[in-house]
Length: 166
Image (cartoon, rainbow, N blue to C red; front, side):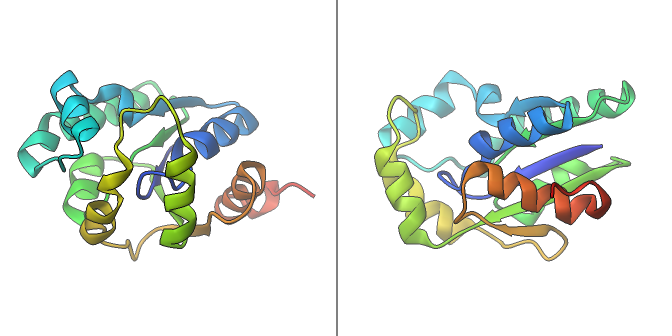
């Protein structure tokens, strides 16, 4: 199984994803690592990516998911996956992918982005991401207000109720 943690920048995808993967004993992948240098530079300048900018990135992530499934590798992938079309491109032909939407209020997310240092994502892009976001109807939706450990607990409980921590 591959779990895709999706949401806007600052929703905790990487932090929660690392906790979740560690707890499950699975591999963790961050979609940010698959962006081209050009895409990173654009985002750092505060320029939103176009669908054309995202196309090779989404294809690389789709290939990653396919490789994981081909090797029966359990993995957690942190990926914004803001639009339904992106999610469809990521999962086309996949057998066992679960989508988890990390959702929270814009104010909380903006505060988190403001406190983050050393990341290429320009916090000025948050509004563009919120506007582009198409909330999924087929995902486990988890509130991000808790600690990363609490959010990971909620994901585990939602995906595997019998494996939920006490």
